[in-house]
Amino acid sequence: MTESSQRTNPDSGTGGKALGKRGGGDPGTRGRTTIADGVVEKIAGMAARDVSGVHAMGSGLSRTFGAVRDKVPGGGKSVTRGVKAEVGESQAALDLEIVVEYGVAISGVARDVRENVVAAVERMTGLEVVEVNIAVSDVKLPDEDDDDDQSEQRVQ
Picture 1 (cartoon, rainbow, N blue to C red):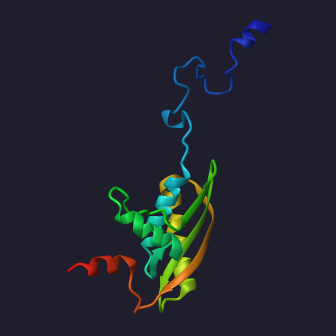
Picture 2 (cartoon, one colour):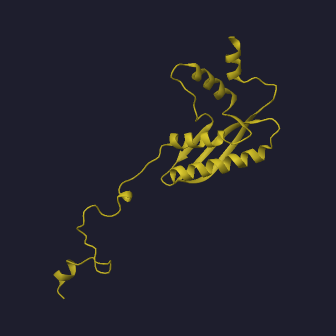
Picture 3 (tube, helix red, strand yellow):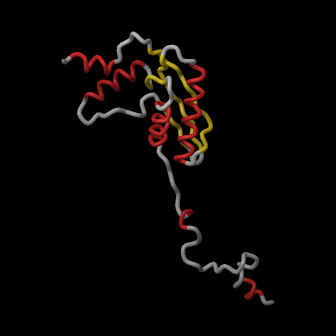
């Protein structure tokens, strides 16, 4: 064999696929997908709120600012309140701040939140969740008024 004939067939051993084929493989693998931190924060916030025993997300200060923002037209409820995400190319790490209901086992609620958040984020994004840190910032007592309830009860 001459040297030129070896160069014209660099594909030997790959099943005879031509290198000049248009497209270059499965369309689903062409290009790159990036996921913003805010997307992961929304998914995690929704998943954490779904857990029984979680009363609210965020610290008292962030909930106060959130209540004010909710009253502003167009402000809307923030599902990312109390959630911070760091997203890499294939992994994500999350920090959550929650308020639990009085009487629930905090360790059980934290475990359930962690499991729900990891499942939701991994299922929806394909990212590996390497850690979910949970800070319990408050306990909602049965006789405490919510900020949201006070605004509705003022005008009758």
